[in-house]
Structure formats: C-alpha cells, structure tokens
Length: 144
Image (cartoon, rainbow, N blue to C red; front, top):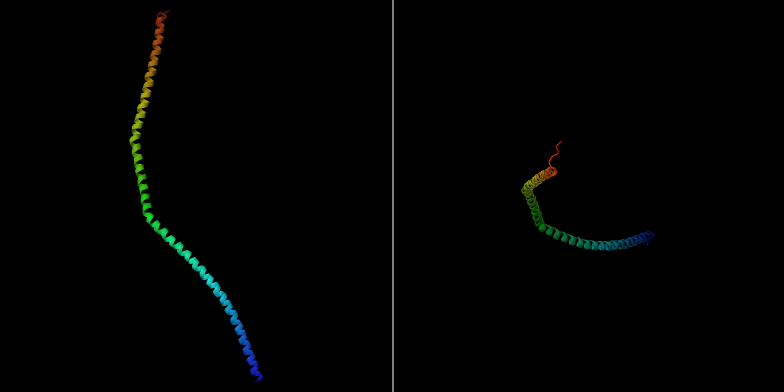
C-alpha cells in the first residue's frame, strides 16, 4: 500500500473514531434529556390531574351556586317586601297613633291647666274667707 492510502486510511479511521465518540456523547446527552423530559411529563401529568380535580370542584361549586341563586334572589325579594311592609305598617301606626296621642296630651294639659286654675282660685277664696272671718271674730272691721 502506498503511503498516501495509508495516511487516508488513518485519517478516515480517526474521523470515524471521533464521530463515534461524538455520537456516544450525544446519545448520552439525549438520554439525559429524555429522562428529564420523562420526569417533566410525569410532573405535568400530576399537575393536570390536580387541575382536573380543581376544575371539577369549580364546576360543582358553580352548579351549586347556580341552584342557590334563585333561592337567594327570592329570599332577598322577600326581605325587600318585608321592609316595604314594615315601612307601611310603621307609617300607618304613626298616622293612626300620633293624632290621638297628641289629642290626649292636649286634653291632659288642658285638664291640668284647668285643675291648677280652679285649685288656685279655691285656695285664694279660702284665704279670703279666713282673712274676713278672722276680722269678724274680733268684732268686725276697725272703725276710727
């Protein structure tokens, strides 16, 4: 064999060995990447399972709220109606009770004023009688 062919064979063999080493290293890296991808995929699957559970619970909650909403609206409407009725009742009560109470208070004030006036007059009259009767017991009015 000629030296040129031998050099070419050595270069081709060396290139083949270098390519083989690079392929082995690349396969090792690809294997590590595949393992990492597999672990990531498992984590994603677990996360997706949790997301599905949460989504299912949210659907149940929304369904429950959807069922409860008409009842809550009905209860709120009832409370609103009750408030209106209470306002009307209190207004009617004030309208029906206020005037009679005011009239009764006015009558009571009038009776008190009248009674005070008559008692005052009676005490004045009684004082005058006592004053004049005291003069009669002494023989009448003093004459000079």
